[in-house]
Image (cartoon, rainbow, N blue to C red; front, side, top):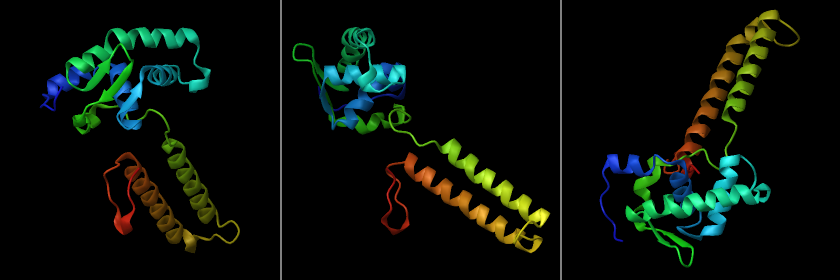
Length: 178
């Protein structure tokens, strides 16, 4: 099929299914082309929140049957992939950038941002408590410096978090998001 325009309603319909989103996401990560077997294994691993080495035959079979019968044919019917059921090859068609907003970004490697923010907050609470209690070298005169350091730490973590969630974002000094 050729490149074509997709309506927002059509894209929502196509990507309303997790397996279709996962299939396109995996294809994007593989450079736009793969065989069915590794796709099945990865989707089963994502669905069961396990590594690909731990996927059982039953989990693999369940995903294989589903992908073969519904998600891949639907993606092909909408011109998103070129799916050959005989050779089990799947190719993502060139208009794949249109689909990016509809895909799960949380699949695969994910940084534990909630833990990083919790750690910065915990350090801040401890530092402020020590300055208020005048424990050790930390005195009430250091409170403004501690507050400034905490604000800068939160700002830094927020910038890194934002950059990691937006691959097209270009930061100063040539730093690029993942």
